[in-house]
Length: 362
Image (tube, rainbow, N blue to C red; front, top):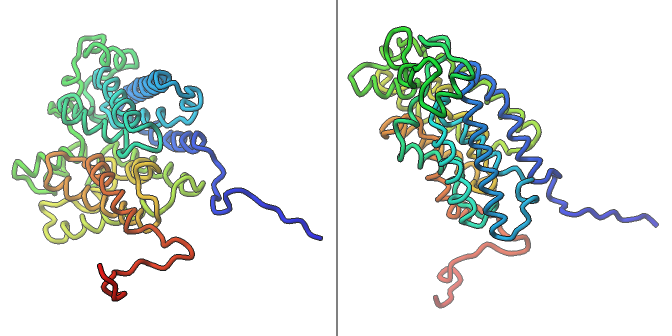
């Protein structure tokens, strides 16, 4: 007589626990972080460290106050991942208190207030980023030009000193460090394009800036490609599903192509939108958050496509050049509705029909 082997969770093929998944996502960020550090300085690592430490400490204190298993909660690494994602979104030489306030907000008010991991409605890192951008716009838009274009070089000690005091060891401020060889304060490619269009220049004229090489933003393109490599690794390891990244990038490219085809002098090309800003990071590392994203495959396609659409709309007509955080949080609010209309029919049950079709009294 043959034996029958029974396994638990027959439809669950990924045997990794939450902590393992979160750590794999962090490992996949390493190529992008290294490239970001290479082009924009060691301040990137300082911001990541500040955000991760603050996030983990905040989570530990709150969980301890709630009399829950602190060790188990910390080991799931969700707070560390939220801190890392916020850290790579903050300008490298932003004041230290930006990272601390943002990380505390992400964990205490976006995550733990709702009950912790699995209950938060919004992506903690993106909600915190939006709060920081609206509350402290000067500090949150003080991105440095690529190291190759900076007039003043700075070391790790200079970066550390600037983050905590506002000045390098030689007395240079962040604004002085942002000045390129042309004597003008540098901006990110997305911010540069938006500013130039407002001032009446065409897209072609805007792309002639030293920080641009055609559609390819100097420094930002290699960073985006490095994060893309990490995202593809997550897909290969089946840490994330393909539905959100593919639909999000596809919708963004389709929307930008329609605008670009209509008038290429005032709208950026699909290639420009793809490799400048955080579209790739958002598609693979942020929108795929299993807690705040849609849960069904059909729902994920809708969720990702809507984010991609809103990114281009907000970038084009909104006040903020990189709209990933706003688009993600906007669609986080729509997740319950998306899940409601895309959830599969329960096995053994017929789809509900209206009482009118059944000739029943309402």
